Length: 302
Length: 327
Image (cartoon, rainbow over all chains, first blue to last red; front, top):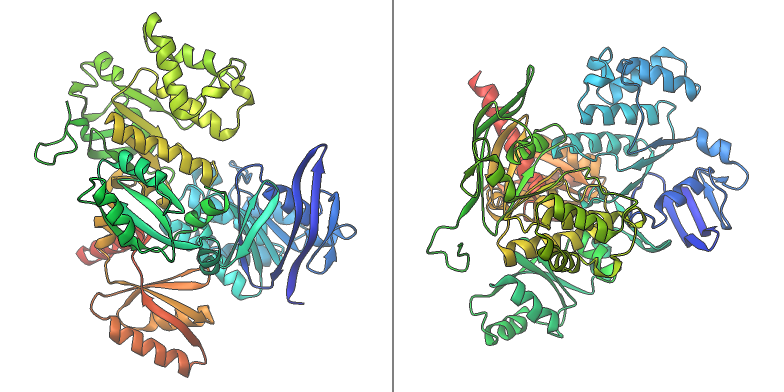
């Protein structure tokens, strides 16, 4: 079975409010899917339905081949969940925390507890009190807890918030190792730093899944144009000028310059000529690679 | 007055920290940190939780006492001339408190009065500032009924109500979505460009750091590198190679075995290799060949611009190598 998740027209209403609106997608084994969207866009509600914690109002979904309507217990046994606000026992050691949670999942064998600690690189800290761990190590312990029962599917909610890039990369190396062994991961996040690590990215807004594809495809399909950094002074006046121009698809402030998306058929030199005519003699424009953030803003109508 | 349009005159330094240090018992939370922020400038303090960012901001706004060093805000010494220095500062802490049972207008009036804004001034000033942050239509709404992004904007309005020249923002967009973050940053950049406010902002995120004019990377209480995003990225120019193909774990393994490859990181459907500058052609050719022999396939291989994340990691690795050499 290579299809790990299949969702068809999944919908959840709370009273008048539609939290998840006709969402459909599939996830293959070994994929790392990023799920982006504002708070309240329906990300968590979707995951709660996939885990069988919440029944949909409409629609169908299968997780690891099990029907979410009828087989939620089987699903939960084979899924791991790491929440951004994971709760660890601060006055217990690393090992004791993992043993405790292992017990909750029915994992009692000490060999598996120790193997899990090895796998996330926490073997040397097994006797350390959780209260003494840095954020990056706590995140690894939270991951250990999520994988101690060897799940086939992992849900990760902003797993690396608040750590530096070194710790973030080390964490993602662990995820990729798991993925290499056939685990599938679904990551919800607000941060482009995290989304960049995903093979495919889905964008949710107002309960709808607006797009789900590889970052490369999203940049091509969604943006409908190319990205440029534009330098001009005074900056704010240049912004107002460009906002009034019909050429750009989007203009925004970005540090000491402007980020501009131009349709593919528009030569950047045309825009530059307009600016120079308007008195921005020193303006210059440089092509840059579009970011996932550009994609996100385009999808949000920005 | 400060002149930004012309580069002939030096800009005015509004925040100046000189070798500031703060210890909590054994822990040196901030260790001889020096930084300056000029008017109209946005400076990022970038690092993980626990790196010392928040302590640095608290020292700069005078909420914590220095163990050593000196801080000047608009020329006033924060320890000797605390009142004058603080009058220049707007501070948005990570967890700011709003009165949820008061309206937007009542909240902002409270902060205006607490900040000593005169009776005849507060109303026009509050209306101005609420308009600026985009809350003018919500003056009568209870703060408790605002969305996360709107609360953030009200927090910013409260920090700006006394027209400070210096703005300190402690992870202002942690936990908000990308659209709200984008809106928030449009405001910050406008403040710097139009009001010439000096802005110091802390963040653990590189996507946020890249919007600053200058960045200080912070780790274990120390600033270990600073520069403009462009200069920092340029320091790795010609040394990041992007590889697409499959299987990625195999390609990564092969890359790491290749002399001249310092680091290989996977990002979703691609690898970023950091290579010794000048070895590009060799490495590309060797990797193509070895991938083929090992049964893998490279579909694309080209140079990319370094990201701030690459810079952060490269600097840290170089520092570690340097340290182990000197041992």
